[in-house]
Length: 490
Image 1 (cartoon, rainbow, N blue to C red):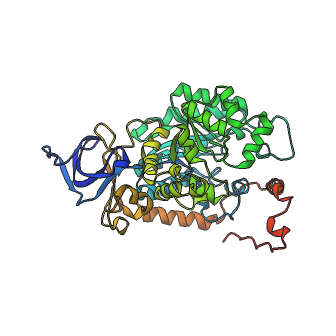
Image 2 (tube, rainbow, N blue to C red):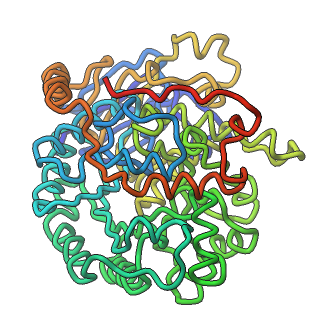
């Protein structure tokens, strides 16, 4: 618990970002905002911080990430998700100390980039999964970031998660009870701890789970009153697999079994049918748009304009750093604002840049299941970011909110507070020894220059499946082009 802090002389973002920034002070009492307005009186004993015209906005919320995959940045070829996943097993069998390292480094990058909350989906395939999850949570607490951690569960083989030649009902390879017990134990240990950590339920995706496991995850999330965070319809093969497996679209299958509700958060949702879009909106489910990773992996384009028009609730995320090559929510906001324009003939439906600022703040709060984050207002938690108004991104200052999205970058971030506690001051992270973490990461990388450790025996079958639309061969092969040499790990 902190004392009282008066942020004076700044411009504060309105709860409706379309109204932009206005001159105002912010009084923080403990972990919450006590007052917002021009010329606030300094209470006795309150610290005063002169912002000198700095821009005050809610902390950005990264609603979908995977901290262990930080280990694999720039180690994987440019490949579609189904192949990329084979080389991205980083962290699944890592020691707890390494998992804690990647969580701390991820938190450092995000906090310095104005992110005050993150949803971290963590898949561990080790007997020490409990210890690994604890190490990640401890890393986030030390960093001072707010984190919702979703232990990822799945019980189907990789070969059963994409439409290969096999057919019929997938055969589970893991005990349902073991999967759910892992999540329940983590929730019991960490949910609400330190005022920073929440536990969510994280089925990898309906395509990676048997129906009984997925139903168990939904029941657990509803019983615990927490969010169910899952991947859904990220690629075209996933949509094809759903049709083969259930004889109908994936979300129609979930809805028919009462497994799609307001607790559901669907990451990616690149390939929904129009009917599935309506189902999401009616169910009150959340969708997390990860525009940069969707394009980097060639997965496609989430139909953001259509989802917003249907009334669906949307947040923004970066996805794993190793498929996005970064954790910048400024990048996510700009991608979300401009990506859809060539695919949306009616420019009146183009997502407005300033609305993307709302998706990255209030939208992210909804993905966390929080109604006390996402805006700067009395009674809300003081998760705040101060941007440098003197940066060239705001020259000339025509529309500061729009410029935050269209010209924004992590270098704008001057100060960051989480729950009233200063974690970044004058662009320096005060909670972690970043140089020491960097040196530790270098040592780990030298010891294991290719940390994926994934079994790639399924690669030929997956390549064949991905090439079906091209007649079984790469388009450049069919036209006589040369196959480029594959990169080798350093």
